[in-house]
Image (cartoon, rainbow, N blue to C red; front, side, top):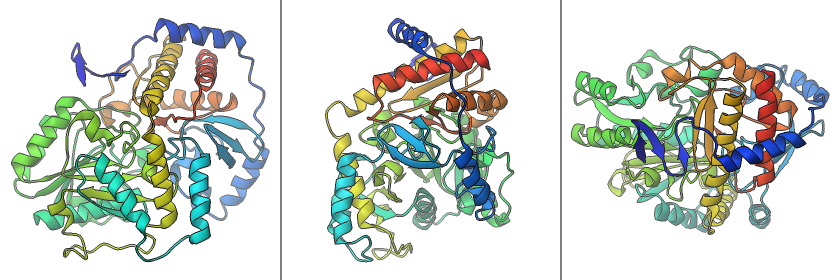
Length: 467
C-alpha cells in the first residue's frame, strides 16, 4: 500500500473515488450508445415461491440479507448458475456480482470443479473418518498463507470464528475479545456486538438471545482508528485474549484498511501479549494468492477462512502458529469437533479451485476487470450528479452513495440507503445482480468477461440518470 495525499492507495485499485481512465470511460460511452431500455422484469414465479416460503421459513429465507429488506421488493429465486451468470425461475438471466457471497471466484459451476465433485461422489459424499484430501488441501493452505503452520477444517465461517475465539482464550488464559464495529464474524453470541452485515442491513439492535456475559466480554473499537484500540487496551490491561478483524471489511460495505492501521494492530497485540486474528473468510484467496495478510505484508497469529477455500461447498477453516494450534483437541485440551468437518466433497472442490487460481494471470486478470468495473460505476455516478465513493482490491469491490471518505462503519452508516435501493432495483431490471444491501461488498470472478463489464457499466449509466 502507498499513501497519496494522506489517503490509502493500493497498487492496482484506488481506495478512494477517482475518475475512470480515458480508455474505460470511452468504452463505457460506446456501450451506452448500444444499450436499450430495460423491458419489464417478470418475477411472477419468484414471487409465488417466496410467498410460500414465508409460511415455511422465518422471513422466507435461510439467511437474512437474501430477503431484500433493505432494497425493497421480493427476492429473486434462482434456478441455476453458470460462469458469471445466474438464471432465475422465471427465465431471467443476470450478470452475478455476488458469486454465492464470494466462493464462486473461478465462476459458477466450473467444469473442472464439477468433474472433481462427480468423481468424488462415486466414492461417497461423507466419511466421518480421515481422508487423504484433507492432507492435500491442508498442505495447499499452509504453503499459501503466511500465518498458517497448522489448520483445522470446519463447516462454516461462523464455526471457524467461534472456534478461534475459544482457542485465543485457551492459549492466553484471558477472557476478553476486541473486535471492530461493523465487522461481522458469524453469528456466535460473542460476535453479535456491533456486527454490521445482516444486522446493519435489517436495522436490528444487538441480537436478542445473546447473554449479557457474552456481550460483556466483547469489546469494540473503531476500524482504522488505532487510538480507539489503545484506549481499549489501557482500560482492560492484561485481560484481552485477542483482536479479530476483517483485514478488508466486506460486511459494512467495502472498506479498506490503511497500512498503518494493520501494522499498528500487529505491534499493539505483541506489546500487550494478545493474539491477532485476521478473519479471512471473505478475503481469503480472493484478493491474493496468500490472502490479505500476504497482500498487506502483515502476519497475524491466527486466521479464519471459508468461502473460496471450499469451492462453493459448505466449509470453514482456522489455522495459525503451530504452538497455538497444538492447543486444539486431540493434540491439546481445547475441545472442538464436527461430524462433517473435512467433508470429502468440500475438500476436492477447494483443491480444484485453488489449483485454478494458481494459473498464470488469474489474479492479474481479475484485478484489471474489477478496477475497470469500479472506475466505471463511480464515473457513471459522478456524471449523473451523485456523490459516490468506493474502491476495489483484486476481485472485491464496493461503493457508497456518500461523498467520502468511508473508513469505518460509522461513516458507512451515513450512506444514502434509499438511493441504493433504487439503484439496486434499476440494475436488477437490466440483468445485473448485486448484493441487496449497501452494507455488502461485491465480487468479480475469473469468468466475468470484458463484455460483462461493459454491459454493467452501460446499465449503471442508465440507472444513475434515472435515480
